Structure formats: C-alpha cells, structure tokens
Image (cartoon, rainbow, N blue to C red; front, side):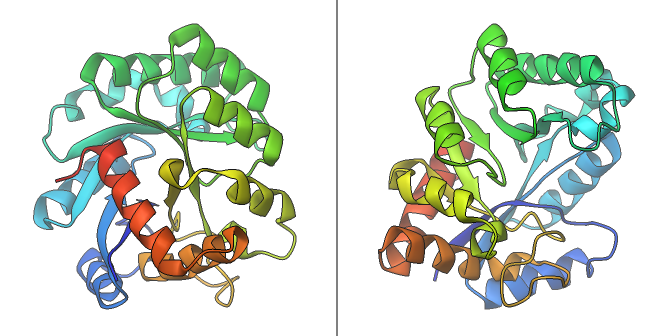
Length: 250
C-alpha cells in the first residue's frame, strides 16, 4: 500500500518519538506524512522532523486558537524547502480561544501568505462556515486549498468544492454519529479527496478514544471507500495522487 497522511502533528505532546511514529506508519503502508504547524514553535518542530526524514514534509501555520500570537511569528520559517503549505489556519467559533475578529485577521493574512509564497492553504473551520467562505472570497481562494478534517455535510462540501478546494477526511468518517460527514465523502469527487489522521486526535474506529497515529490512515481510507462503494485501492490511489498534486510532492 502507498498512503499519505495529509495532516498529522509530528512531533506532538503525548505521541511517541517521531522516528517511531514514522516507522510504524511505514509498516502500515503510510509512506508519506504532512506534519502540520499550529503556531511558530510547532511549525519549527515540524520542519525539524521533515528535514530529518525524507518521507515527511511540513506546513507553517497559526491555528485560530493561537491567532493572538500574530502571523508575523511565522515569517522566518516560510522559506525552508520542506515547507509545502500555509496552515492549519482558519476560524474556530466552538472554543473561541482567540477573539473572532483576531481569528479573521490571522486567517486573511495567512491566505495572503499562501498567495505570496505560492504554497497550498490548509484550512481549519469549526462552526464558522459562513465567515470562512466570506474571508476566502475577500482574499481570493488559493489554487491549492484543502479543507482539512472535513466536518461539514453535503451543503458545506458543495460550497468548498465550488470554490475549487479539496476535502480531506479524517477518522470522523468512521464515527457512528457522523452521517453528515459520510454524505460529504460520498459526493466528493475522487480527484478532490484526501485522507488524514489529524493525529494524535480523532482515532478512527476501532481505536476511537485512544491516541491516534499516522499508521491508522488505511482505516480512514477504508471508511471512505465503504461510503463511496469502491474498492479501498481506488481511494488509496486517488488520495496519493491528489496529495502529491495539492502539496506538489515529488
């Protein structure tokens, strides 16, 4: 198997050492990882891991929870060749750890960085769909945009697809309560679909409630394949090709 975890957090508190995580993923057929930044420190850590492992790439981003830190804290990290995207960034109105206006400003500034540096954009949105699309419309949707850990239903999926974005599905697609996410996965065209773990969070069934790992990507892929009524290999091949294209991986 040849899977890519399009969104994980390596290293991260509570996870094994990066080398062990990467080795376990490879044994499970997950041979490429995108390690995602959520602030300057986590972005720098992701870059360090990517420099040390040829199968890992990094993103640089400021999560909406940390928007008050300021996007300027990221600028020194953007020119490293292992960096393939800006994000994760966006809006989170569920917890509101940062004020909404600060979140919107940080999101807009990171969209501008994606344009300026010709990088992909990785979006986190939670209970903020309308404002997310409003900011994207105002700033212009980068050509390579991903809604990570997609949690919307058919309506939100169509809106994201209509602006040219790709959808990345996590272990949530395997949760009993996530019928709306499965509906979104069912309608998502194969050429716009990615899979991820968002580890160490959101472990798929049958590991739900435990620490997640990139090694569980095949379970996410199987969940998506079941929803779409296709062989797992079809999702595997599509996700590999789409991740390569959206992040411009070799």
